[in-house]
Image 1: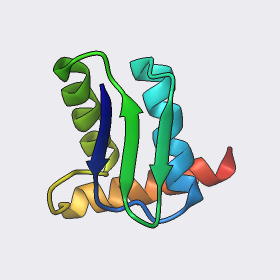
Image 2: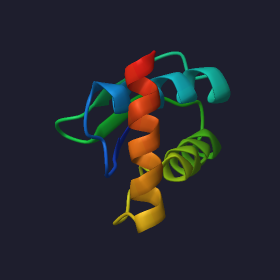
Image 3: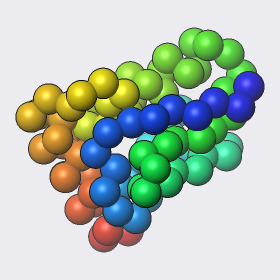
Length: 86
């Protein structure tokens, strides 16, 4: 199923790289598209359980669907910097 999530804190290509890397390597997603302008994360998931796993992973990285907490915002900046070094 083609899924689009609208999340907070995606600021740049570094964020895009961190999200793509995490979802492909740790969750086994083949096709991941991240748009730092719209805040959208697009991917194909075989079922709702995978979609929920993606939502949880994104939230833990600092990219939640809901308004972010201060901790989530700080995590997103760390992931942003990691993504820029790849």
